[in-house]
Amino acid sequence: MTGPKISIIIPVYNVEIYLRECLDSCVNQTLEDIEIICVDDCSTDNSYEILEEYQQKDSRIKIFKQERNNKQGAARNKGLEVATGEYIWFVDSDDYIDTKACQILYNAIKEFGVDMLCFSATQFSEENGYRKYFYDGYFHQGIQINKIYHPQTDWRKIKFAHMNVTPWAYITKASMIQKFRFREGVWHEDIDFTPILLASANSFCFIPYSAYFRRNNPSSTTQTAISQKRSEDLVKTLEYLDKFVSDKKISKNHFLYNQLVAEIYGISKTLLSLNDIQPNNVSVLPHLLKKYHRSLDTYIKTLRPPKYSLKRFVGKVLKRIRGK
Image (tube, rainbow, N blue to C red; front, side):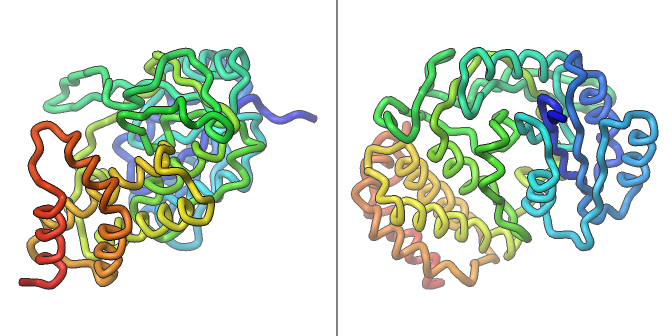
């Protein structure tokens, strides 16, 4: 017996005010041959009860409860472990998807015959019962639409001006993605997971279809203040990307190498802005700044308007690390 066409994996944690909208958008898909895997990460609100309510109405919903809160990476890994679909799509529980999304994405990934299919999103904010929608054109800059790219054999043609590392922006062949796992118990697990996954794909394509509705949620990871733990996890993402680049001998012209350089700059700059927090593993940064200094210099010169020379930027980072 063959599995469903698409497995939607939804990590769930304390999202009772948004969860119904997310689930409604999934169960009402025009493509009915799907499974909806919901992994509750020890919610303390009514999220799990809502999942049980929906499961009673729709047998395609499969719910799992983590034994302890271990963040989104562990919840997504559980979904990958139990998924039986031909393709995998991660959906965040405070967002929702277009009701035609699964059908359109499934048809497209079949037509192009790729491992991964990328697409667009629409952001929205909500205040006093009113919503404001706007197209999110920031992601996948530099990539041509409806063009098949081959990351392993022809990576020179891939020129990301910006790579979207959020897992919901891709639908992926299960036989490929199930070989990978997110790091667990950490924040920002997607910063290293998605670029490494994309670099390991035989093929991918970007289509200009807005399948996803992304909520500007003030309580989401990207909107909340950075804690000591989060700052340390940001530095860890650089270590994992650096290890992959070194182990695989990734070329300096490779999009993954360039992504690492951009992350070194961005994360270093973020840590500079923290007044009372310094990660215990901050000593990793001087090593990476030295190792990638030439590429960082080139990257910084491309920024408009240029805020730092490399020398000044490194000086600021080292001053922050030394606490002077």
